[in-house]
Amino acid sequence: MTDETGPRATTARRVGIADVAARAGVSVGTVSKALNGSGRLRDETRARVRAAADELGFTPISVARNLLAGRTFTVGVITTDSYGRFGIPVMRGAEDSLAAGEMIAFLCDGRDDPIREQHHLGKLLERRVDGIIVAGRRTDPRRPIGADLPVPVVYAFAPSSDPADCSVVSDERGAAQLAVEHLVKTGRRRIAHITGPQSHASANERAAGLAEALAAHDLEPVDEPYFGSWTEAWGRFAAAQLLRTHDDVDGVFCGNDVIARGVTDGLREAGISLPTQIGVVGVDNWGLVAEAARPPLTTVDLGLEEIGRRSAELLLDAINGHAQPGVHVVPGHLVVRES
Image (tube, rainbow, N blue to C red; front, side):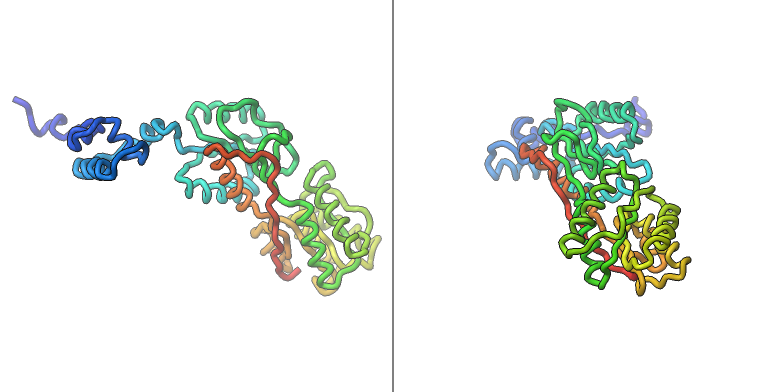
């Protein structure tokens, strides 16, 4: 005699698709089509199948359902930004668009290591992801993650060096132009530029954008760009150097907010009133730095979350057979504070 209190009695058999087919009086294939919204079925047949599924408490196994559709509804995101300064906002934006497309993302940290990156790529392809977003922390073009991959790839912030790939980038020159327009609008005419390493694409693009924007107003920059590092220490040092050689400067455009915070500290220490005597504008709109600066920084937001959203939208389009190769530029916007 079977003990009804034992494990066998407490283990219920999962309702399967065959049970729904039997209850609705249709084939298993018809059940699959009715629940997936595919195929050519009469409305009354779909309704009967769904009613049978509800009566039996049948829940389709998502993996099986998705595999029948040839999709897993998953996306891989490989980032080289271990610090999260750029990768996290891009990821937030991407998730907004992916969620709207009923997708989920696997996040992998490549750590600027090609071997680790290829390992993550292999694992994501094993999981049969529908596509991949590759997010960088620098705007320098990078090598494609692979050739002839079975899924579409979109590069976010750091573009692919292959023009046939799809890349979404920030408007580096446009950021400089927004900064200059604001400085000029507030009466500045002697504008200097303090920025990061000359080996970085973003530093060069922003310097070029500054020169173009000043030329449009028949102005010349104060000296050549001060190239250095992306640090507060460099900002303080460069500010002191600038004041020693150009005491008539009345505006400074900084290559990022960290440098700008160092510049404002250096100018204040030299007895300069901000923004009365010298106005300062940064880039990034990194709240942790910009809002804590004294005075709080006016800066250009590069639209990192929008880059993420646009990257995901383009990836979803590519997954659905509508790839849009080339470089897609996301404009930034000025955030006015007190500097």
